[in-house]
Amino acid sequence: MMVLERQKRVTLEPLYRVAKTLLPGLGVSQQNLTYYASLANYYTIYDLRRMNPGQSALYLLCYAWQRYRQLTDNLVQAFGYHMKKWKRQLRSALRSVQPMP
Image (cartoon, rainbow, N blue to C red):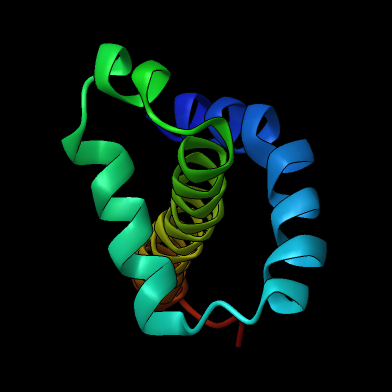
């Protein structure tokens, strides 16, 4: 599952870099970024193609920005989960080892 998340993140990285550079220059607020990303998810590909190209590009760029950040958050949470799991296993293993006299 994490491998797929990483692959998606790698795919979106070039678009995220463009969005990270372009969107602040356009003055898009965080709230509007989220809203535009939701519109890209709401509309079908057919609808997006029929829109003004600048408008659909903005929606898709916001979607790519939001999705990249979501994938990054998912990977960080998964890493934290596994670190806690390994830490518990290590503590358990250390408790089972008896100290040398």
